[in-house]
Amino acid sequence: MKNKFFIVVFAFIFIFFASNAQAQVSDTHITLSISPTNPNLNETVNASISSYSTDLDKSYITWSVNGEELLTGIGKKTFSFTIKSSGVTVQAKINTASGQNLIKSASVNTSNVDMLWQAVDSYVPPFYKGKTYVSKEGFFKVVAMPNTGASPINISYKWTKDGNGQPSASGWGKNGYVFKNTYLDKNNTIEVESTDILGNSTGKGKITIVPTNPKIIFYENNPSTGLHLEKALGNNFSLNNTEDMFFVSPYFFSGKDLESSNLEFTWNINGQNIDTPNPVNILSVKTEEGKSGTANIKVNVKNTKTLFQEIAEQLNVQF
Image 1 (spheres, rainbow, N blue to C red):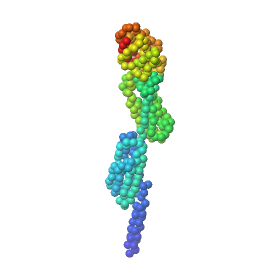
Image 2: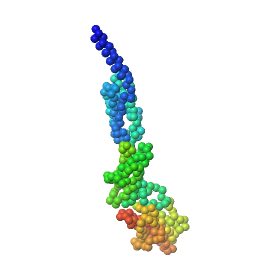
Image 3: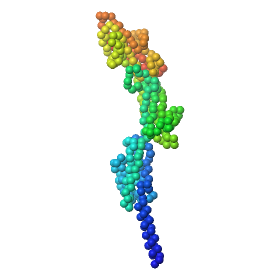
Image 4: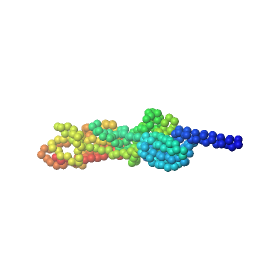
């Protein structure tokens, strides 16, 4: 009789504590893991939940991203999705076999590194307001901007150019990388990986840069009305007076100004070379009064320090 009483009491105590333990399960007993912790945009993110306090295999689990339910079912402890933006909220709603409702959520931030490039030594005239491009054999600067909120000086950068590491350009606070395009390069692919002080990756970035070709553009520099920069001349121009001047502006050659850019101007009229004017980019044209005809003006501009920074343009002047 005593043994039966003992067994009954023991069973009661066991059931009591088991029920009590089940009642005390909370979201703190659920672990939500995200991998990778800082994914790149459009990368697959894997989420999973685990617990030592409740049987998740028998729980009804609903997964959602930013409030949109994407997966439901019994024992659905893992979930994968493609991240489209930073700062998304992943949530797991858990309905346990005992009827408890638990919620576990986490915010996922992307680790993309924004990358911008700019010209280092490409010439454009002072009045030009557009993007300064770079020709072959010119210098580019790429700047990395991790989306971490941390100061750039507290981040280490590892740079790669066309698959080759750039150790001298890498290191703490080195969020800018300057390189020269060679005449053999059709384009350059620059990659960077940023890490925090603990060595954890905080982001990756990649950019492909394509060099352009240099340009030269004719403008009228009328002796009476001045330089007309508002209108680039095409291939044909009608001379209304017996005298006019033509201003030629180069674009995207290496060099910050005309004097230091090693530019060589060669002019010819109707196939005959003429003396280089002074300034080298302004040609004065005079015709005899009462005569008419067409003059073909051609200018060739070459950077003498490079192999491929060279271009020629022509203007047919009717008088």
